[in-house]
Length: 556
Image (cartoon, rainbow, N blue to C red; front, top):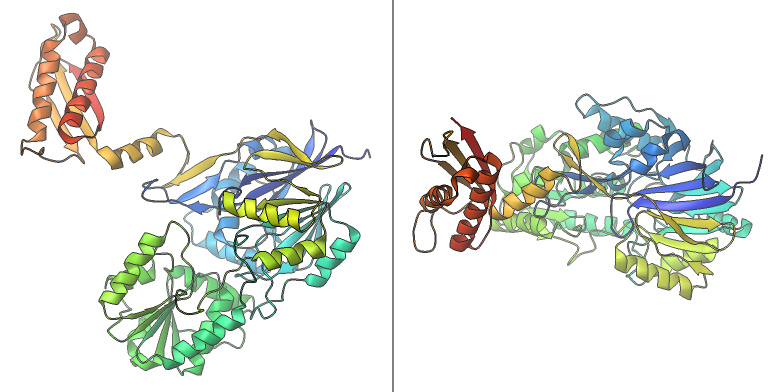
């Protein structure tokens, strides 16, 4: 068999942004490559800029065209930004999926929570195992992170080995699972690593990320000293943190109540996989009110301000089973993801208004990141000694700082790229050689929309300036058959002078129709366009904003 011409890498999501991770590796000639995909994640919609959009996913049109050459999708771990798009996008690809046991079990539980989900088979790979996928041999190397069974992938090929780190950190005392496998990473470095494709999330932060064990100690002290009820919110997937909270509750002689479906699902999977062995069974939220205030601790979803999650409902006194009172304590054992500050702030204010003491990482070490800071990045580079480093998983500043650090650490070639850039890794001089289709898909209800879809664009405009609906009935002679119908939605009732806008728009419609030449009045499209322009201009004159305007002309 002939030696393949090129080994390539392309991010289709997750570069220049945090979330929506999808990377692909290609091996072969420029005209015929085998492709391996790593992760298939989502990011979350911003109601202010994308009203009605819950999830954002990578555009996979390139992989759809290359489907026959796609040997599989390999998952580094089970965070939503790495596997959350599979249910929606896998039917377009229908390729094998490979993951370790916890990730596969969490995915299966997620499928069970969907209405009419597709049947998606997942092949379970042991932690530390190796699998052959076409011309790629993929090795799962354990790394510490904020969810069980996170793995870096060593992708072995005839043209060299690539280490795709996934999300990782160096934590000598991770509470759950093994530390990052330094020994195996050093062995890879000794054997020779062509490229390191690495997590840049914390590349702007000096030093090292603190350990989960330090957080556990702080939380235990806070729970022991609390007088009333205690609620702790954290990322549902952070099973080590859930275990630390449960251990703190036991030390304070409190029963643990789980509140929120996402948390219930992860806890169930963690127990099935043995990650909560030795931890006392948790209670259902229906028992919350049966325990004295100093004998209960609630672990809640909603650390990111999600409006339908448990903590948001508790903060607004709208939860059916869980309430908090003056003197109770809420611990935010999480960090606020950029973009969620307003929503989280609103919940904190609601709790404070109820007299609840709120503790965050602003004042106590109640959360640590699952991503490496600068000293950890330097350690990884010194162990692996890559010929090429490509920063991924970060916004522009994170990527740039990771690149500078890598150059200072002596990496021979550092390549910064963006979503869609096709990077040749070898043989020969590495660099960007092409651009692949890349973009975003929006999950709008049950429908996947392109970023430029009419619904998405128009809804943004509707949110800003409302809409005017006008219906006009015209005779065959080009005369008004009846008074026009005007309906203004999302537009103020009156202008600054107190005049009714409906009436102003009505007068504008009538005067516009009557002012047109008779031939133009008989042309429904021309008439509708003239009225549309006039109405938008009139509302802009009175309000300072131009609404969307829809005009329906009916011939009678």
